[in-house]
Amino acid sequence: MKFFYFLLFNFLLFSCATRKDIVYFQGSEQVNTDNFYSLRFRKDDFISINISGIDESSYKLFNSPQSVTNLNKGYTNGVPPINGYLIDVNGNIDFPVIGTIKLEGLTRYEATELLKDKLKDYLQNPVISIQIQNFRVTILGEVRNPGTFTIPNEKISIIEALGLAGDLTINAVRKNVKVIREENNIKKEYLIDLTKKDFILSPVFYLNQNDIVYIEPNRAKINSSMVSSAAGVFISIATLLVTTINTISK
Image (cartoon, rainbow, N blue to C red; front, side, top):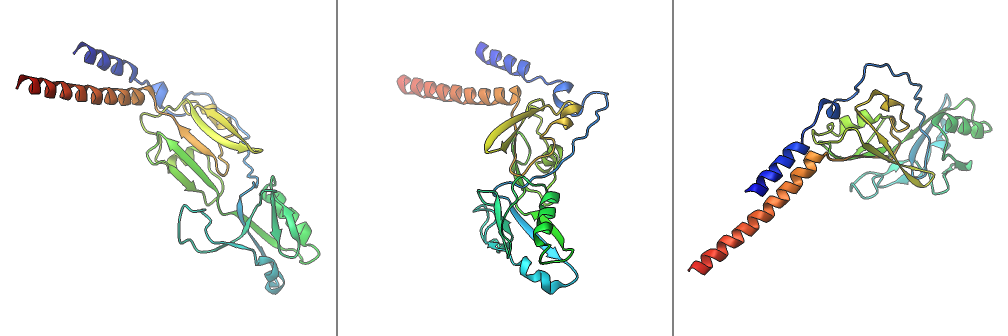
């Protein structure tokens, strides 16, 4: 019984959370930021390119891209073919008539200007629209609705992403949110503190395609898991002892 009270005391001691541990955007100071977001194309991005103009017949040849049957790569079956271009391992796409074009590392504006330059011998004043079709982020850990989310507008802040995941649970550590991002074929980890206003200055405030956000559990959640496990062991041992005693007494 004393051991049980000891466990209960420790659970209550370590499960106490203060306002500073939970509330977002703390502090009265103003945060000025020029955190300009500019998406850059990456390998394995699946993009759509639409070219239009006054004379539709002259643009038709350049709007006949390859198609991919399952954009989700096995996560969802029965997806109809989608027209577009997959940026290959070398960062290139194979464009009609022009051939190989390197898009990796370019912003949308830079890619649009590059295409306009390459099409100037074939088309006059083309209107070019480029969009990523497989922009996704993954939210894991102490959120209400973890999962992988497709982002249609290709721009999302970490706060908006957490909103899609149903916000953090009460057991989430808000001061140590981890963002895993691939840069130059290397996985990098960034830590941000959601309780402070200046986290909007972080390079991961706006998420990139395929970013992973992980929210770790607080000490209370970990302790409750330990107590539950210990309680299960104690119950099993007690049941075994009672059964043994009953058997011997007979």
